[in-house]
Amino acid sequence: MTKQEAREQMKQCRRKLSVQEREEKNRCIFQYLMKMEIMQQQKYFFPFVSYGTEVDTIQIIRQVLKEGKMKVAVPRVNRETEGEMDFFVITSMEDLSRGYQGILEPVTQEKIEASEGVMLLPGLAFDRQKNRAGYGGGYYDRCLGRYKKKSLVTVALAFQFQIVDRLETDFYDIRPDWIVTEQGVF
Image (cartoon, rainbow, N blue to C red; front, side):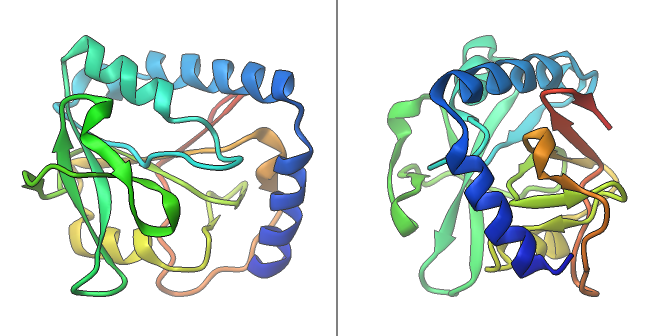
């Protein structure tokens, strides 16, 4: 399946989820993620802030902030170097404001390098080999190209129907270490 085909198909499938289905799937994904050992062992957490029909990360961010065991930093698109994003520390959800394309971004100024910890990756489609089709902007691939080190663990969040048999890839695509769906972790 091409990335573009996968993107279109998954956008439609996500829109078709009822509120109840979405809430149940999000609850299961939340539980699987929070039980992962890496979520107990790392000092830094780099989640994306969900919007639209994505897997909900807001409840995850709130829980990690509440627990206080990890420093939380979320991305903000750098308007000076178009196509790049940086991560900024937040201590509460009030540290976020609508930014690029209406996505919540940090208004804080403490920038942190995303070189160690757990990073959540958004995406529209994934395959069984952990290839990922994002939204087409390449933000995370460029970011991970800058920061990817052995001490940064990447976790993609998806609904199970977003996993396809095979997805085309490009040389610059970076695979997540783990994918969490409502059916488990692989």
